[in-house]
Picture 1: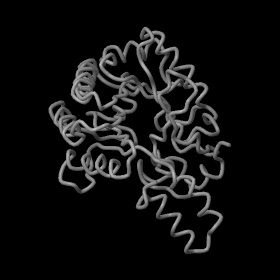
Picture 2: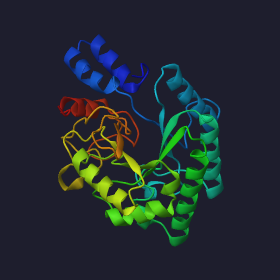
Picture 3: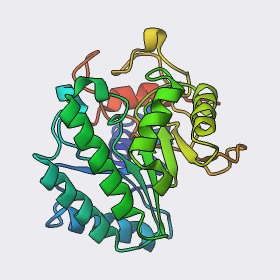
Picture 4: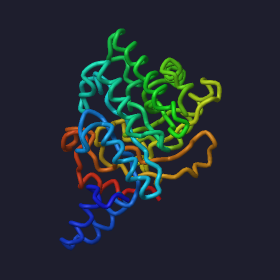
Length: 287
């Protein structure tokens, strides 16, 4: 648990206001570890390297494994709700160098660029080539330390066929990584994502492991596959390495439940804390 997280602050505020039942629900969010995302913003520690060092050091002080998300690719999110990213190829390489410097060879999990490989169709041929080159560079740089486990993001089961995703992962040098991540910021069930991951792994020659984001998949995918703040969703399985599947290294809350997907379905800007949505997810939590 992060005592200064927005979920924790909301829990404390609601408890002070006498909203004890709702505070108890939001505690389901506040009490669980989640990944920390790094990109074209600052946490106030001087640089990307300083920000990452702060997070990895804080996790080490709590004797927990830091899980970080690298989210700074140029032309990010095809200009949609999470548009932004590095201003150039050179700027992205610098971002990765600083990320690696901040980790400093300490035991860390890195989720590498959610959606980047899954949404390639929106990019020009030249931009697609840049993505493959940059992801390969990131894998080689970050995984140069044996203590760092890198997972290239592979979208989700409702996005690309397994064979397509396996080919893209190969071109991005997944062979140099620990494996790939699935369902990041999405809602699909763990069963569907497990089957999808197994199909990708088979295409890759049974050489990769994967992680599934279970932060918001307790009620499965929304009708029609709606992905932007869909109603009726719930928290999924809390973070654990006890997955019962030797290919799945962990179920983990990569997306912070309660952070908006964008200005859709009444939500604030992408990444902003939305306590009402978090409350709904908690009230409909799996199990």
